[in-house]
Amino acid sequence: MKQVAQLSEKERRELFSETANAMNITAAAAEKDFWICWVLLHVFEDEKLSRYLRFKGGTSLSKCYNSIERFSEDIDLILDWSSLTEEDPTAEGRSKTKQRKLNQDINEQAQAHISEVLLPRLNELMGEVCQLEVDAEDPHTINITYPKAFNSEYLRPQVRLEIGPLAAMLPMEMCDVQPYAAEYFPDVFNQRVVSVPTIVVARTFWEKLTILHAEAHRPADKRLPSRYARHYYDVYKLVESGVHEKALTDTTLLQDVVLFKQRFYASGWANYDTATLSGLMLQPSVNHIDALQTDYEQMQEMLFGSKPSFKELLDVLVKLEVEIHSESS
Image (cartoon, rainbow, N blue to C red; front, top):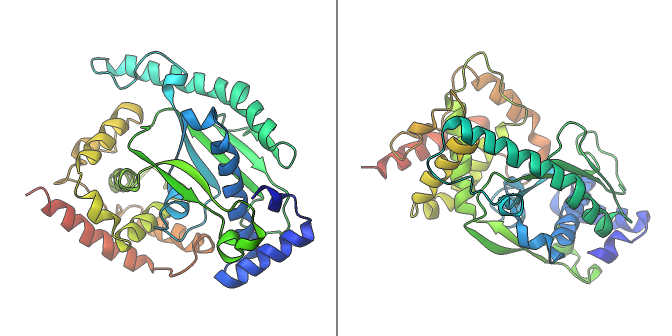
C-alpha cells in the first residue's frame, strides 16, 4: 500500500478509475477506500498504537466482515481508557453524578492525549503524504487530508479518525483489511493486507440495534441526526448476511451493550431499560419516519451493490423484531 501512495497522480487516477469501472462505483469512492486502508495500515502497523487502539463501527462492517456495501468517511477507533486513568469506569457503586463526572474527566484526558500524543505520532507516520489536524469542532477527531486525484461533491478527500475512550475493547478479533484496488489489481501492491484488531461483528450488531431502539423512542420535538439512516441500512445488511443468527446465540452481548449505553451515553428518552430480548423496538417512530426516508434517499451515493428500498428496510426490521422477541419466550 505504501508504494501506491507514492505513485504519481496520473498513475493513481488510472488505478482507481479501473477499480471503479470493475465495481461500478465512482473513482473518488475507490480512491477514498484506498486511503482508509492506508490509514489503518499506518495506525495498526505501529507497535505502540496497536496495543491500545481498536477498530469498530460501520467501516469495520464493510472492510473486515463484508457485511455491508456502504462507503464511510470515518474510522471509529476505541482508545483504551486504562491508558488514561487508573480508575475503572465500569466499576459498580458510583452515583449517576459521580459516573457523569468520571466520564467527563476521561473524555477530557482523551482529548489531551489525542492532541498531545496521538496527533504527533500519526504525523510522524503519515505527515509526509497527508495533512493531519484535530477537527476544529470535535476534539476527539483527527482529520487526515490525502492527496486527491479526483473531485467529488459528496466525498471529501479526507479520512476522519473518530477516537473515543468510553467503549468496550472486547470481544475483539484480528481481521485482514485490504483496499478494493488491491483485490482487483493485486500485482500493483507490494503489501495488500493489514491485520487490524477489531471489535467482533456480533457486538456491533447489538450496538446498532440499541441505536434503533433509542430512535424508536425519539421525542417528536428532537430532530433526527443527519445520515442516521445508515444504521437502518446496516441492520438490514447484517440480517441479509446472517450475522443476526450468530448474534442471537450470545445474547449476553446485548446486556453488556445496554449497560454501556446506560453508563456512558445515558439518555432520558432512549428507554435503554426496555432494550431487552422481549422489549427491543426496531421500527422507527412515526414522528420521524418521513425524515428518515428522506435521509435514506440522500445517502444512496454512499451505497454500492444492491440498494434495498426504504420499505424493504422496514419490512426486515419487523421480521427481526419478531424473531428477537421469540428468543425471550
